Length: 262
Image (cartoon, helix red, strand yellow):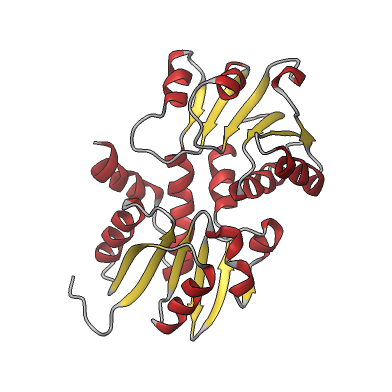
């Protein structure tokens, strides 16, 4: 692909950027003959990031922690899902007017729409948890509990979304359908105990290799979902927002097999 003065620029900004998104995006830009490039960059200053997006005329910018909440005051508009969650992972820039979107809700919803669950526990309290809760409520799941080492933030989210707050593991009296791990925690202590009581495990950590949590789920014969499953749907939605092209999931699966799994 020839890079020139007509090339559209898309950024991915986080405190610790990787190459996962860049590999997928640049592969599909070339596949669909789009004169575009996607670059990951380290950034923790939301204001400077938005100023750079506008100055460089970037058409889009993907953001992850710790920017998902912090970027909101510097955007011109929010989509409905971004407003609901106060969490943004996708930014569109049109002639200096920026709009924040949230595709995490779509990713979680697509992963879980094929299973029937009624009792769910979320481990963690970061910004993605807002998207998880909204997705679960969209799926008509009423029994949602949250447990986190950051008890203050977990308490605030429990009140905001009217879900149950678990203050300690001992308050769990029975098994439950689904555990969503939204932390980078190791498979030990509280998380290990939570996993042992769950019938289905959804570990949101994005890794080409099985995490210890997923390995344990496999060993115990439990149904499980990985962060890659959510990410591929999130990517599909985000690519469509950026380009208007909806990539078939089979194409994304083939790309994942080619670059990350095989």
